[in-house]
Image 1 (cartoon, helix red, strand yellow):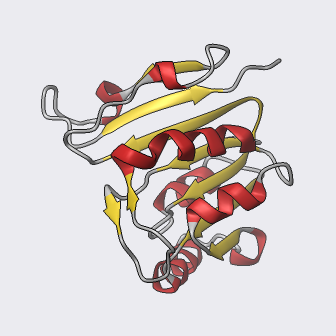
Image 2 (cartoon, helix red, strand yellow; image 1 turned 180 degrees about the horizontal axis):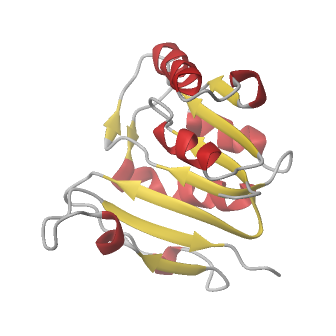
Length: 166
């Protein structure tokens, strides 16, 4: 994350953001629908002695955020770790990672700077990522084995999508 503009979607307690700050991210933005989790993220910044005023924490629906943010700001590194399913009263429709991931990933790619990288992760046990749904100009890699502690016992699945530099 060193020197990168970092976005953490579905930030929960901000763990990825804390790691990005510790790794030298130049700017961070953490987005979560829950005000309680946003407060928890700020507390984690304080516990790690990070200045919470230097890092944006936004209470918003991540799906709306990525659509509204398109064209406004670019990020060099995005972590997107959505829930498997959500039907929060704060959302207009339900979210299912198996149904909605293509549009979510496409929206995230629009927020990436040229050469930027998206890390997409899910805990959905029956999830299948279809790279053919995305532009061939982007490099997509399954990195699940690099992110799970026990071979053959994947507790989640994870990919990187690197946006074309063109």
